[in-house]
Amino acid sequence: MKIQALHTWITQSPYEPLLIAGPCGAETREQVLKTASELSKIKNIKVFRAGIWKPRTRPNSFEGVGEQGLEWLKEVKEQYGFKTTVEVANAQHTELALKHGVDILWVGARTTGNPFSVQEIADVVKGTDIPVFIKNPIHADLQLWLGAIERFSLVGISKIVAIHRGFHYSGKSDFRNKPLWEIAIELKTILPDLPIICDPSHIAGKRELIFDVAQKALDLGMNGLMIESHINPAKALSDALQQLLPNDLQTILSQLIYRQATVQDKACTDKLTQFRNMIDVVDDELMNVLKKRMQIIEQIGDYKKEHHITIFQLERWQEIIRTRQQWAKQLDLPKEYIEKICQLLHEESIRIQTDVMNKK
Image 1 (cartoon, helix red, strand yellow):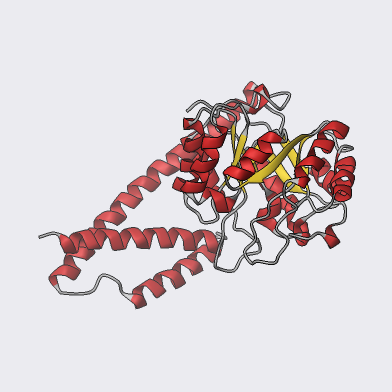
Image 2 (cartoon, rainbow, N blue to C red):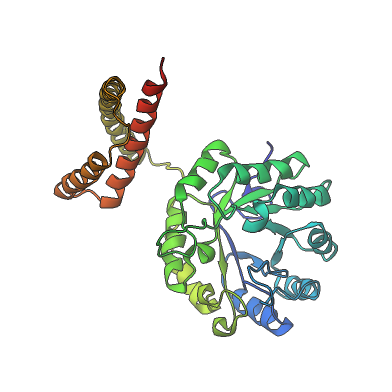
């Protein structure tokens, strides 16, 4: 898969984060141009975003102004020098965006989850050089995200960027969409040349959480940020709670710490190597402990099979959770961390015992 680095076509250097800002939705010409005017005062914002077609859960909500909004984006380009980007969800959107000179297309989370729609858009952009940004699907399905990226690569698009905007989560969470950073990290592991930027607005869902999400994204080495900004968020027709005034966005961007992905200083590199060697020793010990645990689980499975005992024992599982949480507290380990580890170990224990039960 051929993917162009951001600095070859939009940023000044490999170390410069790509910054994208603009309103959730283009509502009026005045709103779009005033927002762009204020954002033009913020250094390093390269791209102006605005939703022209808004995929809404319920009908009769604000669903975007449609094609006329593309004319407003032309004015933004002419007056303030921004590149522009809009979300497209089907072939018609894509054709209109290309016709009106939009610089970058982005595929929204709802569309990424539909391979038919993704292919429809890919077919339209085949033979063009337009960049395509692809948001993760609503649900935590890495294969759908990968599939969308591959569909654009297969039609010759090489300026591809993934956007991490979080995932729908049915449990309790401080975020509108749970970050699940590990999925973005796995995508980067599979496609190391793929730029990934973060959309803190859609992860946070609330203005007050945007800074922390943005900083975490940068700390993890993401290549940029897409943040929603509106000239009057209180009157925004969509996602009012997560949009920032341009001045507030400028404050956040000025406070963020931009870290280096690579280290040139030899003393620093040597120290990191020392720490990593220590981790390797601990991990080697951990692997041996896990192997010993698996062997004991196999013995338990044999014993349960011989005595016709069910694999899952609720009381034992409750005891494990309770005691491990107590041990974690004594060692000052985070409760959630230990719960995740216990859950993984228990799932593997069930799998091993199931295999034992199924042996003839």
